[in-house]
Image 1 (cartoon, rainbow, N blue to C red):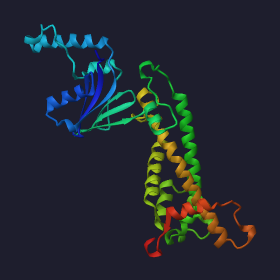
Image 2: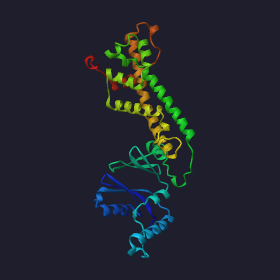
Image 3: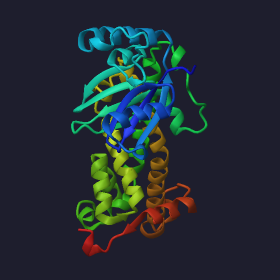
Image 4: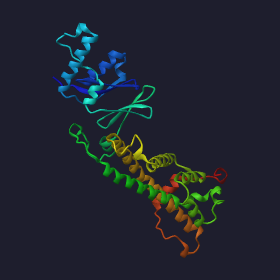
Length: 324
């Protein structure tokens, strides 16, 4: 006989539920027969095996329920709970955790968060080790949840946080020195020299720098989306992310959420840093070619054709009339 398994069953792209069954067809049939969904609208994804010991526990609970609510079936020798929807006690015995956050009811099981919105719609996302190997093809698939020890990774997270903050500082430094973004008439009215510009932009927030860049340049759509995402995540990072409920560094769930956040942020930093470096190098090339006449005045930074090409592809100078 096959083993009982826990499935996540999705119907019509809206509803979701956990079902215990021996195969995906059986799991889907529970939802189809109970709610009348078309078979083509229902999917079932295996979550994990259910230990044999829990089958007897489920049958005992079902018999006790029947004695109170369905006496006609309580004494049947073939009375079994499954296949059926997974009860909360079963999910807890399988290691699930529950919380309410940001108007969502959430269940965490094996690094997958099953979240229910206020309108009843379900969605899922991965955190922890599962998120890492899904985003990084070179990492081996992690599937040791049955034997996973309770590990405090707080110190490792502090190291990752330090690396993420360092990347923030390096990227912001590159953008703040990219005086090419001061070519709009609005910025030129504020700064007369490169030194004036550098002094003024040291006081700007990263958001202010990006806004000034958009005054002078049309930014390629994908690059703008990446810059906006970087700014959003950077602000989360520097404004106390570890003390928020979702990313609390002192809870197991929070640590798993934080691991996924930092992995995504650091992967985003790599292309953003390349773009930021191209902005600085283009600024230097523009200065050395058009602004600084004497060789002794020129900025001694090696500029690559690749960086210049990247800047030109990402940033298109606006007409003066539209750059106000």
